[in-house]
Length: 67
Image (tube, rainbow, N blue to C red; front, top):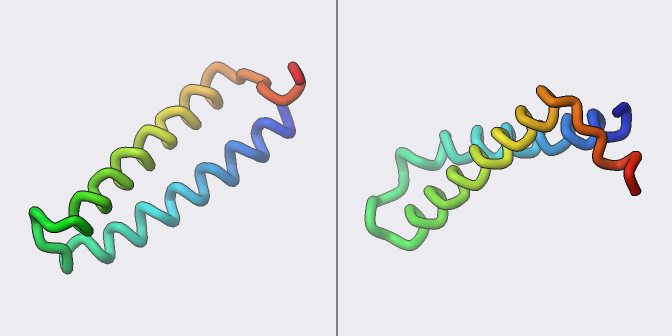
C-alpha cells in the first residue's frame, strides 16, 4: 500500500495544482470560446481524478503489489 499511497499523493498534488491554475484563469476566459471549453473539460477531468484518488484511498486498494 505504501507505493500506491505515494503515487496517489503525487496524482492528488498534480490535480490540486491544475485546479488552482484553473481557478486563477477562469475569470479571464470568455464563455463560448475554445479556451473556455478546454478549461471546463480540464476541470471535469481533474475532479474525476480526485474522486478516483479518494475512492482508491478509502477502500485501500493496493494496485502496484498485484503487478
